[in-house]
Figure (cartoon, rainbow, N blue to C red):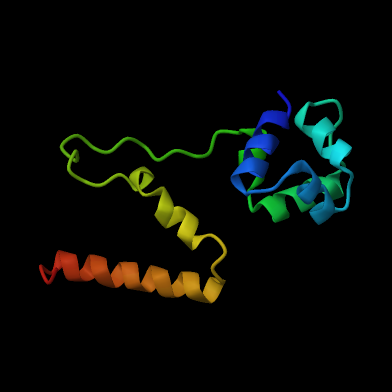
Length: 119
């Protein structure tokens, strides 16, 4: 399976036309059409540009399954599933390592407070 359908979906999701994406990565509109229709495939440098401009990872483009968390233990039905909060994941994308560390510290503080019955 090629990358065509995923590339088109990512392009549309990011709000690009074939022409605007082509201009952003330095190829022709026809090249984007060829990638999406799987007539041809982008070179490695173009592939990296696509990932960067569309703000996606290779798993998304190649439709590889991502690592899934093991099922919740029995009796944990009331525990929110992280998958139910995709906006949280998307809001963390692009943060600097320093800011990600701050988020992690805050989450750890919230867990500690919750465990101590403070929240």
